[in-house]
Length: 327
Ligand code: GLU
Image 1 (cartoon, protein in one colour):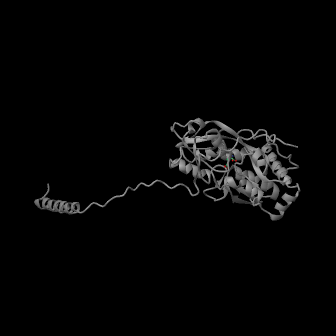
Image 2 (spheres, rainbow, N blue to C red):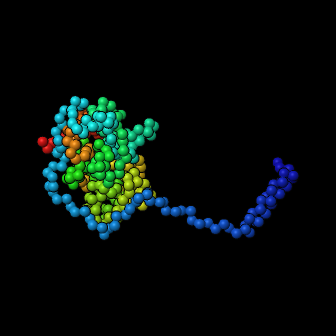
Image 3 (spheres, rainbow, N blue to C red):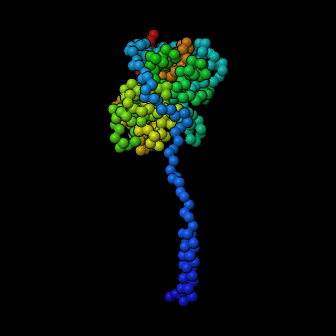
């Protein structure tokens, strides 16, 4: 039971609060500006103008089978040649890749080391050439910088989800195929986008300097394309709903999808994308050496182990792509 004194105290407190509220309500309300602002685009995001010329369809065949490479001389440390001798004298293999490409080349969150399918294939080359997988220096490259980095010899190799095609073979050399990818589409689940046909009139994120951009521009010219520096940037602009879809190789898209459960790969294959290690032109001894390493890892189980480590989101471990040779 409450005492009369207790009730009085409660009344006094309520009155005081009420008068406080009354004096506040007479003050003008602060003007509130909307707190929502559109998220910024990543640095160097550029819309591709729809009236810029669409790249011409490649004339086939331009170079026969672009994936046919030079036969390996001998696998392992005994091979000699001007380029591989120079790398041995330097003591480090310089490898260009993307350091933010989930599954292929990215920083291990604990060790900080660059790991992934591409990074580990490059380590196998360093193991054979220099006796240690760690005698390697990774240099960060955007997709559009791969060919020039090889032409300018700022790297010995490019291991960056690089499709072998005739156009590129005019500028650089390639190893045999070490992974077969397919271009597809990544969209938000239940978005109504089920493949390339649904990209008509939609906004699509693509990285410049890629086969992916050429294919969408040719095969879906009404799509509005936003280009950004990396595929990781494409995931961000999809999450921010600044685009409706991303289109590139299934292997890269699987790396993005595994970082966002609200996204999914949709549609059939738009094109076949055979990946090769990019090598400067005129470095035949290095091409043969890398092909020797690829041959070794196809046969000794290393390729399957690396695939199992990073790429099982694509399905069970397949057989490694068989090499084709031009000589
Ligand atoms: N495979 C495509 C290409 O080589 C896209 C890969 C990438 O941008 O890393 O153009």
